[in-house]
Length: 161
Image (tube, rainbow, N blue to C red):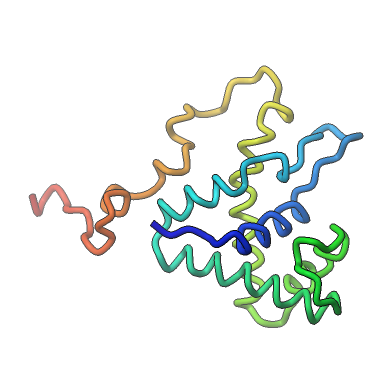
């Protein structure tokens, strides 16, 4: 099991809050900061492969260290005002370096998994999900050979069995 450190979880909270804030006057009042970001990240650490989770972790450090350069401050990233955190993320996303842009896209997509689940009832109150919940539960999207912890063993085809 891989887990993030407390500092990495704070960086993630600051990053995700900058990406998915709530709007008290809008249709979606809930921001991602109202959710269990830390618990969500712990579950990712349990289910994602080591390399993918390491990329997520590396992206968080890239964001935190970039704040020193782009926001010109030594304050921790998560303590910056939302507009400054968003400016750092925007600068990274506009980078000429493909990998840097992809790191920010990965953070946005990961946060989107949690935020989408959080606001479903606000954006479609009283409506049934379009598909069965069991099909969209993200843990069930992991292939069986990876979910059992044996990532190196590919699933056997029916012909080989």
